[in-house]
Length: 169
Image (cartoon, rainbow, N blue to C red; front, side, top):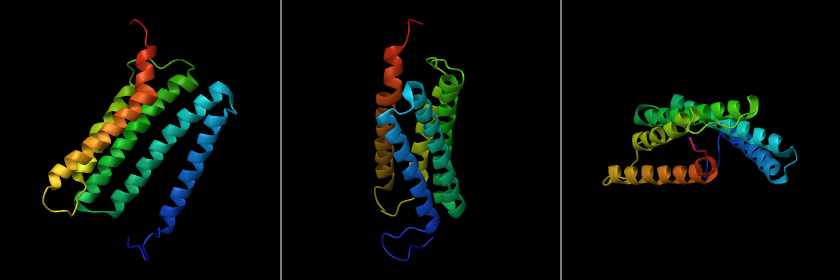
């Protein structure tokens, strides 16, 4: 897929990015404005996070379909990472939204959340680069950077509050 001019996006990619941006903006405004009340906002965020993960996995599947070789393997690993996160979030959403219960700690959802990290690192490792010498070291550092960022975001948004709120069991 060649781009005709610098900064131009193919129509399908532009459309997908626009849909994702509008959805993210809508969810962000809902969270900050709390128009749906406490439960409604929680349900919106849970369902949106699940949909974003599966939307990302679908985009990665398209990328894998269009690529070949190591690049295809990288997209497939990233697709698996997104599906893993989406699966964990789907279980989390079932607990909180449909069953109306607090998600237990630890729960089956954690398998999906934790499964994201090794698959994302494998994706970074599998996607080829063209820098030559030091390739493996750079990929390892890239993987550690992404892993650290995901771990920090996960801890500050989900895992940390869950651990602090945990009971005696």
